[in-house]
Length: 339
Image 1 (cartoon, rainbow, N blue to C red):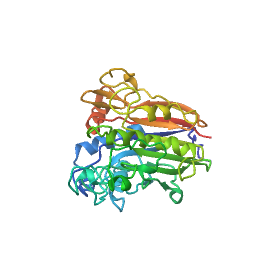
Image 2 (cartoon, rainbow, N blue to C red):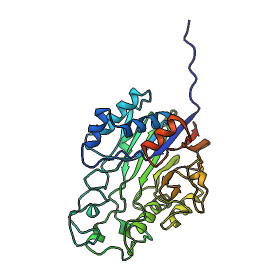
Image 3 (cartoon, one colour):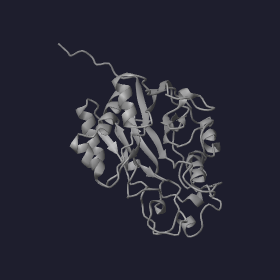
Image 4 (cartoon, helix red, strand yellow):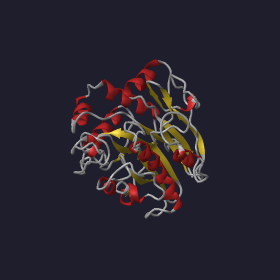
């Protein structure tokens, strides 16, 4: 007798999550994952397993050249019943030494003198966990693109040469990483994490950079950069570190992106613990001391069919406790119909 047919999935879940998987020095994250005793890592594992995404972008995880920590995390997830056979990371700009006084404080070698703020090379990088095959030969890394070369940038006089001439746009990274859909079509993941638009002075270096890191995607789609625009279907996702209504920062670029007819804004909702001052609190993706903000995004291209979307924000029980113990951010996801 033939075995019963297995129902094939009709949708895919694509998600982004800031898991706070960073530590105070290189190698410490791997140590903590392997030891299996860190309650915060256990909470992250539980959160990711419950999310059950087919493709998950992690926007805060320490990088190492052998992908050893990421592999160890994938092993822990497999043990928890949430396997991700494909995973990817690449060196971020965070902690990348420049030898220059990038923040203008008159000293060299500090975390603010790296291409992206970081106390060591690879701190707070990006990574992808996937159940879909990753087309790594077609990966495009835009992270060395210079800020001054962005058309209509807002760099202004926030930096002086030679730092200005060396400053990359990406605080962490900008990637185009394609994965293979079940029908063989590539789905391009356009991934980034921007700097917070705070923690600077009157020069507003971080605020300007934050704006332009999101503006990069509009310029890429417009074909005004020295890179070919990504073909559809694509999804822009990651941590913009900017709310379209609340908080600090120049919101022009994020609102331009959200209103672009080439993409869809699912405006995912959850149930955050505190209200915003002006925006819709149900759309918040992170909870800070002053309240909630929408800072994490999953924005599919207009040709994709969205069947569901949300922010994972349980209010009670073990899963709510795990989310709160893992990170101040919550996973953001979109379910798309398979073509």
